[in-house]
Length: 360
Ligand code: IPM
Ligand code: MG
Image 1 (cartoon, rainbow, N blue to C red):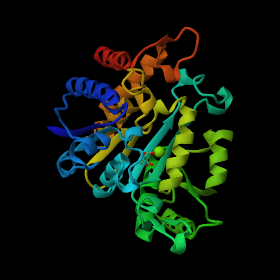
Image 2 (cartoon, rainbow, N blue to C red; image 1 turned 90 degrees about the vertical axis):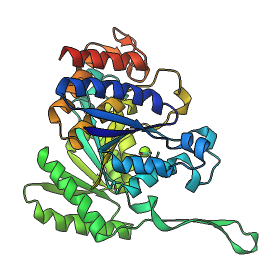
Image 3 (cartoon, rainbow, N blue to C red; image 1 turned 90 degrees about the horizontal axis):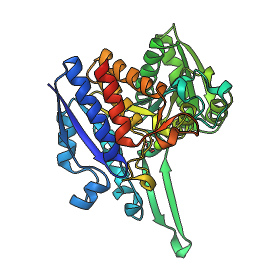
Image 4 (cartoon, protein in one colour; image 1 turned 45 degrees about the vertical axis):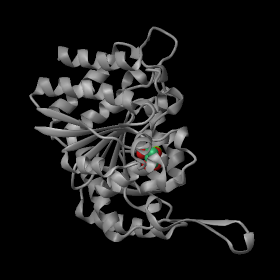
């Protein structure tokens, strides 16, 4: 029996997670994978009920499970709280506590969505890349961090620390080379070596680690150039290896290559249970309207089956079902254009994927 912790969180989180669970249930039944779900609270929802974004009970639940299905956290209601007490802290603590250092964000354009992107067809047709983001180091967690007062009422001083160690870089680089080995065997390591000391170490360690993987072609690219190349010629990329903050920014940018951020799933992996979430966040402006695109979360559920439960066939079946539903012309508002496409809401999109899976 595989046990899955379900953390819906805030905003559109519960709406997208509901659809992904429907899809997991039917997939489990079809492929004979016994699944058990247990819900936990996180983010703003947990702040409201228990005064903390990651209650101990939620953390213990996650530690005791095989995988975590995560919705989203955050919203305007909690925006005035200091950073260390905001809903986002719940997610960051979870990443840190579970040692989820490797964040996989596949950016694949489903062919029927080629016109959903604001970018030209001839630039994005066939895009298929993987952003591999280091997730437990860098600016997000470096100490010192905080804001304090300057003397004599001169204002305040804020500091964040960008810190990386050799072992941290080595382990994420190895994952990068291993992923590249399963794909087109190219790894582009992203840094800012012309300015940052952390990038100098990053580039040195990645170059050294490459010696363990002679079959992989490695190149290095400055992050500013990379953000431009992603729009100019995204098909040059296979695997992009980034530190935490660069990966956060570049993966949102890369999402537009897939038509909408509502299409991008993710997996966060470490030595324990993996966490699976859409990259879009809580989208408070459309929460509760049944219009959010559930496909990013449904595709995250596919990644859960692939990476935590090692059920490649079941994972691929979900991806095929999504592809078929898109080919049949169904679209949520974020990927809809005027024309023959059929506009559907969140729950209907989930039902269509389920139906496609039932048909097999
Ligand atoms: C992401 C999100 C998070 C991050 C937020 C919600 C803390 O933007 O997963 O990309 O910055 O990592
Ligand atoms: Mg982000």
